[in-house]
Image 1: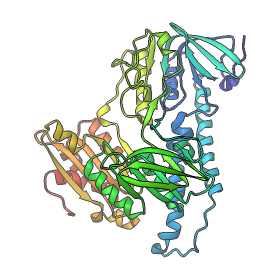
Image 2: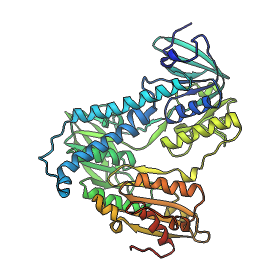
Image 3: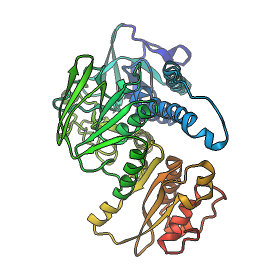
Image 4: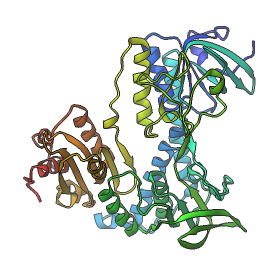
Length: 478
């Protein structure tokens, strides 16, 4: 039998000669490894296949985690040169050591990847490193540098994630013209960076390199930034980011991006050609559903390459399930995790739960932006009558103490029932605050419920309480 690398089997009760499982999970990203662990907790014999040497998927390796590490480091660099003096902390002009910053980012990634490896071992999950292909009912073939392994299982779960979407005319070379993967590992600070796409990823990485010294120009096809987000919050975000030095050119269609000498040139309808050092393409993501043997296995996909599933994550093929970025819905790590848990529980117990109305989204710019539920545009389109309460952080004591009295909390509640329909925040630690809103909404809270909850003083969470009181027109500090 071929010897396929199985890093986690050296200390668990699993023999390489055993290739039959209750469940095979294809992909060890946030959805896959969480589903594997939950299934193992429920008593299933589980194998997890991942083609990359580091576990954690795009989110951990070249996405959520490394970008947040760089956002944190770059913000501290910026604060050292522009903010600390306001706090009475005198330092000399900060000197950037990009290599050390990148090493710290890589260490964070490696530490967490090792942690996931340990979790698989702890839960006695067999880990196979290689490319997986479905080979008929209950069969998966794993190809690695050491050969081919054939595995069998009653159930197969596809959780292979997504990759950056291409754009016609943009010649990605993995160097000067690249995606977020390359932008997370530049060897030098580009003098001029062009970001194509004003979504979460583009704005986050654009912010990183702006703080470190780049001139950043963001090109967006639409007439606004942050598509899909509440427009009032997005408009405020644009003003704040412009104040930080990002340049936005909206309503432009990029037609070409290619190398020119040692740099690049970007051409777009609606603006003059731009010469720059680096180009970051960030126009969305595409599910990783190619080369998995889906057609041969009878797994149907839609026109966007997403796998069709029912309410229990079952595909059109018997015994095959799918979660995360490969199925419809927001491409978010935490959404995939929730689906992983729900899917595993449905497999074993026959029921599971996930509330798609309370999945938050966060842009880790400065200030952060957090959103959950419906925005005003969606409610208007659906003709849902609502009331709103808006509270600005400029009236919050903790925000002033932090030196960040910028932004607002907006709560939207049903006009008749007062049930909270959406919460949208731009301001300090919005990514943490929005989870409070998601929890309240998951229990069907009304604006009055939040307004009647005692929040410690002084905290940023008081802004949530005040906004809830504002739904009924009775804010205290505004």
